[in-house]
Length: 140
Image 1 (cartoon, rainbow, N blue to C red):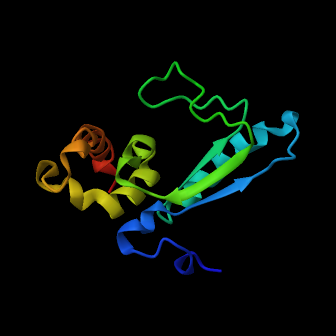
Image 2: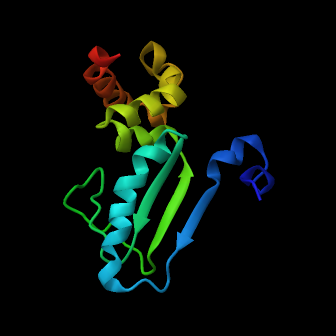
C-alpha cells in the first residue's frame, strides 16, 4: 500500500515516516553487505528526496560531530532505514555534488537571505550549506 495511505496523515507529520527493513537472520560474516548496499543505493535514493542508513552490530559509520566515535550506527539487529530527507541532512550530503543538488532543490530556499527562513536551532547548518554551495558553484 502506498505510504500516503499510512499514518501519520497530517501534512506537518509526513516527514516523520520511515521504513525499516530488518534482517534478523543475516550471518555475521555478511554484515558488510549492508555497508556496500548503503554505498550503492544512497546516491540513487537521495535523488528522490529520501535518505538511507545501514545499522548492524559491526557498523563502523562515524558520528558527524565526533568522528572518533564509530558506534553511531550500531544496532543489535541488522537493518536498513529509509526516511524522508530533512533540513539537517546537509551534514550528510554536502560532500557530494549530486547529493547536494538534490538537497538544494528541496531546501535551498530556506537558506536565502543568510538563513532568514531558518529556525534559530537550524542556523548552525548555514556554514555547511554555504560551503557546499560555494564548492559546486562552478559546476552549474
